[in-house]
Image 1 (cartoon, rainbow, N blue to C red):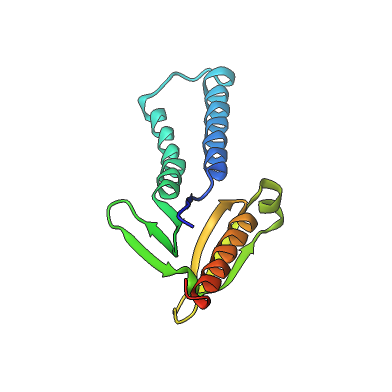
Image 2 (image 1 turned 90 degrees about the horizontal axis):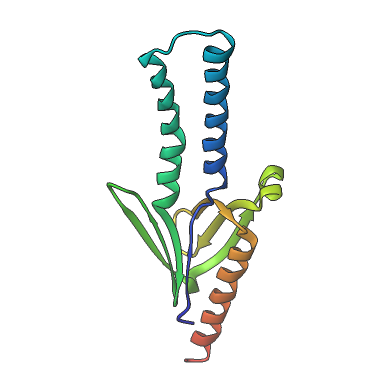
Length: 152
């Protein structure tokens, strides 16, 4: 049971943002410079600030992780300030994989992990194959409960 698995939010939506902004800026540049034949202005470079939207989303997804290792789950998030929450797998009571129609088509979804004695569920949004991860967490939780009940 020493296998370690790290789950991070998917980059599929972030890549979609990069593509969308690139297409919008390319269309605007074509319309402005090709079709209307306007002169280039240094102020037009400000449109590149739109890339801060996907860059922020990219950093947010990379700075968030759920680690399944041994007999515990660890949820870690943050770049400058960090939050780390560790839960005993034996306390896991319910794992929910939630997917909208669009998320199902992309293979994405949200994972909610509820534990005994905790005031709030652990929520991991936008991960790949959430059902597979939910099944893995429940399987490890049951395995740990069996081992503890048999005194191992």
